[in-house]
Image 1: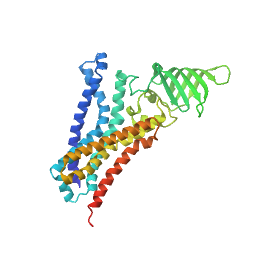
Image 2: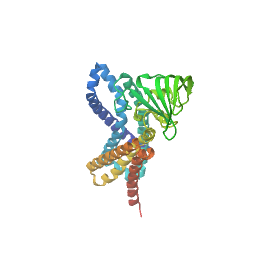
Image 3: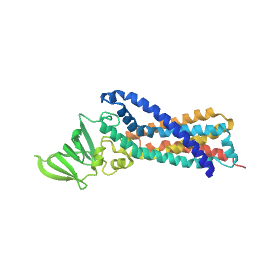
Image 4: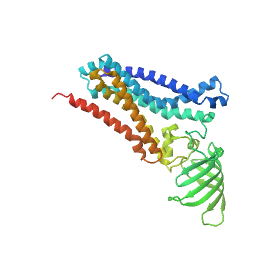
Length: 360
């Protein structure tokens, strides 16, 4: 078992790295051409171009890992079929499920790679691009702003703060609209300044205007106990796909603070988890399709079927993810249904062949 597993892992790993490098180079070239005007407008030279490609690589790699896994799996099984090695494995007593078990080490390795890229490399690259000014506030990856104003949802309350007044652990000249659980406006707080101190935001120079309570009242200081810490403050306008798992958890839990809807954060929280299991599904699909193609030696059917089924999954996953982002599907269902459905289909195909070939 160890010999077969090591052999399959070596074949898959080599082809995966080849496909990853090729796809990354192609997509980086296209990305540079699309954003060339923005780079040249900032006076970018050759070193800046290299820096841009380095910072964009994690974001592209995150999307390419799944496709590279599918193509590497198809190439590996095509090689095994063409050289008769797959038949030799089955004749040696390796069943369909046994073959799949030998693919688990590679699937686990790719799942860990996906998690590491999404949780560490992507947030760092995105933050550097935003600090550099390449990612702007009107980009799709940023929360849409209205006339330089950021709107923050904190529990039932709504906060309006000019974007330029958001600093490192501080806010200035912003407004808090206090509401009850039904969304009814209770009052308005106009705050001149706020700073983060010992886990609590301290407001200063506050003017309170309560609904139906006559004249406004003024106070010098007031504590504002929310779970929005300075690190979360920096990530308010970033789309959840560009945040780490821990950062999304902060926005998805607690009092629901953030510039995006709470269900969008929860959808991407589950999506980050399910994405790590997609390489396992891709290899499972390749193993199931390999059985179909091996009997007739039709390698072209393996590629056509694999690409069709793989991209059908990506399309289905994109549709359910978009429905989860706008609240049409519960976050867990939007993220898990495509993975569960295609895994069930692949396992059913493998089990059917195992059952059919079992001795009477």
